[in-house]
Structure formats: C-alpha cells, structure tokens
Length: 130
Image (cartoon, rainbow, N blue to C red; front, side, top):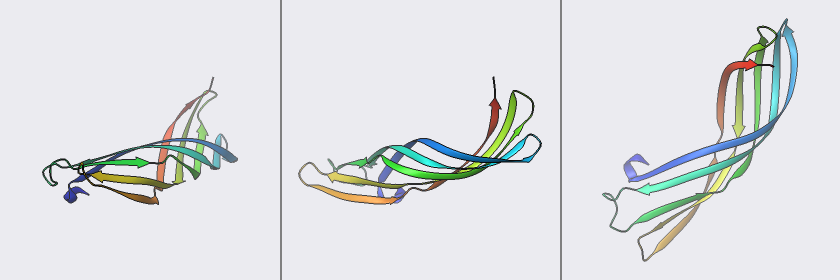
C-alpha cells in the first residue's frame, strides 16, 4: 500500500508442537520429517498518511489469532557426545481473517479481510546435550 497512504505493520508469533519421524542415513547423521500444529498470535497496526487523507481520518485493524499446520524436513549430525548440528526447512499453512475500520469522526466503514499467510522457514543451528 506504499502509494495509497496506508501502512500496515504486522507481527506474527507462532507457538507450535510437532511430531517427528527420523531415520539414520549415515553414522551419527539422521534425516527427519515433521508435522504439527501452530497457534499463531497476530498483532497488526494500520496507519494513514495525514498528507494523503482529509484531517481526522483514522484507521484500525483487528486480526484474529488462528490455528495453522506445518510440515518440514531436516538433517541432524552429532559431532560428539554433547554437540550436534542441524538444518531444517519448515513450511507453515495459515489462513487469517480480520477487520479493517476507517473513520473520519462522523462516518465509519468496516471491511472484513481474509487471506493466506503461508510461509517457509529455513533454520540451521547447533544443539548442545547435557
């Protein structure tokens, strides 16, 4: 919406649980597949550029938190008894619904919006075991 004078700032926090199936593919190396559910907390703010709208025009946005699902694949390799490395790709499928409201102080308008918010995440890291 860059040219419209409307800006949306959105943050997504995703809390998930996964089931994992793994199989050895080499000494100290496993491949794994995972799938699970996510609960997604959405915080979205909308602002209007006062230079592009009449004085007093404001907007607000309310997006519902939603459940989603994820699937993924990965590799982990144990370097020694306590340290391992991993790489993983996870894809999340999420449908969001919300409402945008605009007002000029006298008249208000609301519009329900919905859409797919699917995304992929590539992770790599180090695991420490105690």
